[in-house]
Length: 224
Image (tube, rainbow, N blue to C red; front, top):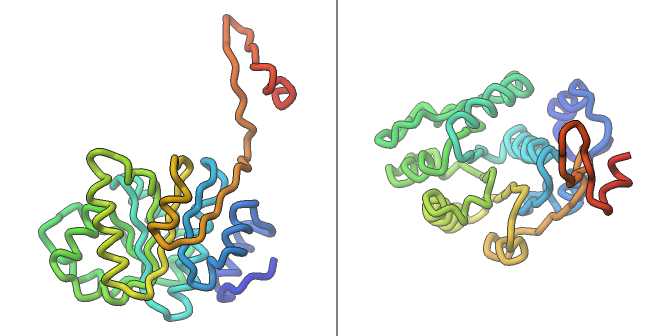
């Protein structure tokens, strides 16, 4: 496994038992993930999108290019990502998640390399003119399909628009398992589109009656 990733991060991958990449991960690498290219990743659940984000973040941070922000839709998910990233990369960089308080600039964030937050929190930080925002070089948007959400969509759309204008050299990385208009969205993001259908467990459809499952004809082969 030879990739243009700083050795400390490469060592973490080996420690985690990662010796080869899943199809979506290899496609992301080929599309310029570690060369600062903005990407829209559209692949099934559990296909390896988080590792794609991790590699981009470690490349940006460990090479001293700037900070990385990981946007998630829920605080519970922020806590989960914070624990996971600290376990794997806490010895290489400073990682934190922000609070839900929308009335503060959280000046302590200036000391951190990877910041995990909700779109609403990041929007508040920008509106409060948090000075460290100018050092951000990578923005990861998890569940980017929420742009279509009635409640969260407008905030996320405005936030991405502001980040593109405010940070001229920012790398955007959108992650989603379900996007209805990936081509259109990738053009708006000015990002390379990475699409893959591989999933770790085959998806089968059928009906259950009592203790018996009847699969649809096209899924019988994968079910056996």
